Image (cartoon, rainbow, N blue to C red; front, side):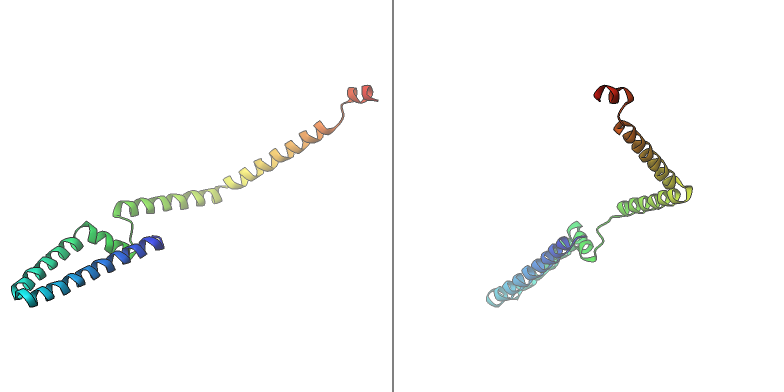
Amino acid sequence: MNRFSRLAAMAMVLFLAGSSMLFMAYLIDEAARKGFEFLVVGLFGLVGMGFLLFQGPVGKAIASMLEGNSLDGATANRLAELESRLAEVEHRGLTSGEVEQAYARIAEVEERMEFTERLLAQPRIGEARHGA
């Protein structure tokens, strides 16, 4: 997870916490004017909305971002499978000599190309007589 998304998740959590604090201050102010019942109903509403928000998919996503676990189960399994396949291919290439064979073939092709370039750079016998 990159640094920006973690920072965005933290900002969102702080915003939600700040909003709930402002709502609490509003409830306390209204309770002083209208009575205690308003405060109780507001608190139940706030707790209920917070519970639904943080227990739902939004809360789980925020918790996952804050923990740094951005992979779900299927993605984590797929990643583990791909890593094991990559390790197997790397091990097979190093132990079977495929890499050395490829380098040997490349070196052979380079030698052939240099030989061909030298042949093409030499003047031909018939052209040398007519040019002189």
